[in-house]
Image 1 (cartoon, rainbow, N blue to C red):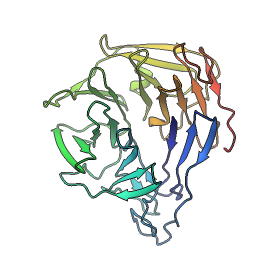
Image 2: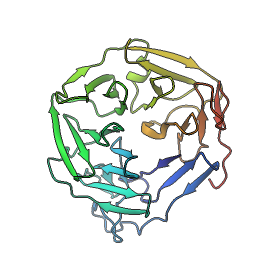
Image 3: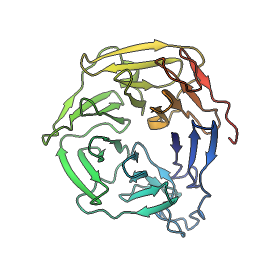
Image 4: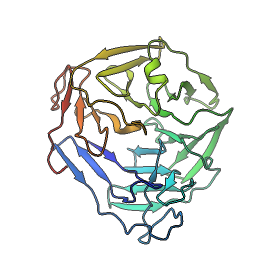
Length: 300
């Protein structure tokens, strides 16, 4: 019941440690110590202790609940010159160790803007580069190419609706949907109304809420948007106490839903407090039912 935060990379932050907003005991925790940073000047993807180098992850990061691991694909490793990688890593929360996976099968392209989504129905992670859709299976440590089409924008975030078995990709003025229930995997344009603020956003925050059965989005301010995939209509709801503008580099999955606590949790920036938000009542979690709530957590 934690929101995990990891990133950095390129010419930004070089530390590769992980942080967690823990909703069970109301703390923000550093889960591990950083590895020795890459001081060689070259763009390495692994560090001297064998751990993954920090990177611009974009949306190529997902929690695999079936194996209690975080999956990271590609990104721009921490180094002065930049550039993109095609490496695959998992982080085990059981032993707090990184593992470079070296999976079989075709890998996604070496590009910015990777998007991903974990599917609880199959235990797979669906990953999309700028052209192709893939799935990653941990049990076989393999990628599978599922679909290839025309290019898409790279200012996007992915989310899976596990009830309808859809993979939805939104941002940068585009909106796409895949049916992941069978074997077709053809990409379709997702035409919606009422959500232009999210569709046109760069890397919006997207998550699925099983209580309201909606995809719920945030891109700054006090307004939250809920998408009904059956009607293709967004509903905007404005509350008080929001954390201000979204980061220009995107929100991604730092806006997520906690089933255990019945709240959304948001980390908007490293120098800001964490927030929870409740869209529906009926939870004992530490957040009001009608607005954003500042998480006055210790150990920040």
